[in-house]
Amino acid sequence: MRVPGVLLNYLFPLFGAFLAPSQSVPLRPIAVDRQLAAELGLSVGDTVRLAPSTDSAGQVFTIGAVYDPRPDPAEVAKGERHVRLHLADLAGLLGTPDRVDRLSIGLIPGISADSAAALLNPSAYGYRVYSSRAVASESSQTFLVVSRFHRAIAVITIVASAVFLLCIMLLKVEERRRDAAVMRFVGVRRRTIFGALLLEALLVAALGSVFGTGLAYFAGAATNAYYQQFFHTALTFSLITPAIVSFSIALSLLLGLGAGALAAWRLVHTPPLVLWGRG
Image 1 (cartoon, rainbow, N blue to C red):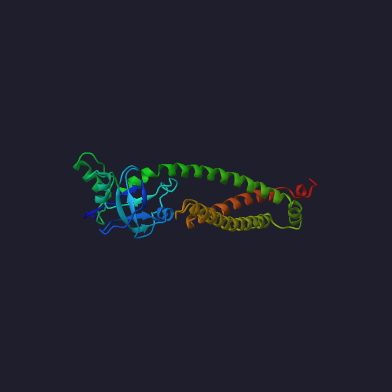
Image 2: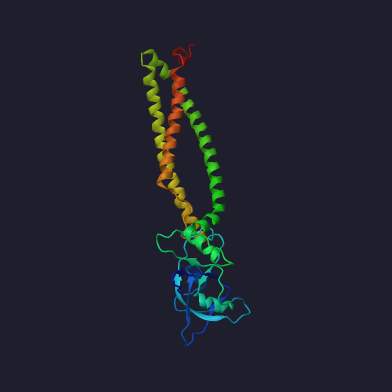
């Protein structure tokens, strides 16, 4: 059923469906999601009987289409299966004509959804109009909490990794105390030693960034492959964007330079005799 200006897309949970004998009269078509069709062994052209309860005779329909539901993070863990009916068929099946729980209104490009909602809300009693952005924002509160939790873990991980990196750089520099002392004895300037150690730290940070990026892509691909198979969905569970990669590499280089600079500064400001072990 198509009403001008209104897109009715009502998802009806399947209460009962089983194969029914074909009839000579044309049957009304329905659409079932692909996972449900696979579980019940249904295909386009089959006939099924739908009923709102197990003790009801229900009505016979024909499967007109098998569709792939749009990936939705709020629905993926529920394990629900859906059937799409024309609104008139759904009302007749439930015995509740002229009643809907939810409908979607399509707007002409250029019309503000907030303005349309503000105009429609006072026009009648008993319903509420929301923009799709408001609905998405409200349904995403759980994911926002999870996102903040992950952000807190990321901050703690970055701080811990920065301390760990600094300790490694300090230990690495300590191993080269005698080399630095010899260079100081032969007249190599502090600036040259400092620059060499800083360049080495930058190289280590760059190699670590490349390795970490490759590991992240591999882990993300493995995560998506496992959970997409587990939930039978095309939803992306792990997404690595160029912005994330760029930020991670920049942060890695910055932390590497900081740790290398601190360790090198400590080394070049130590007297050569102390570095040689004579001071």
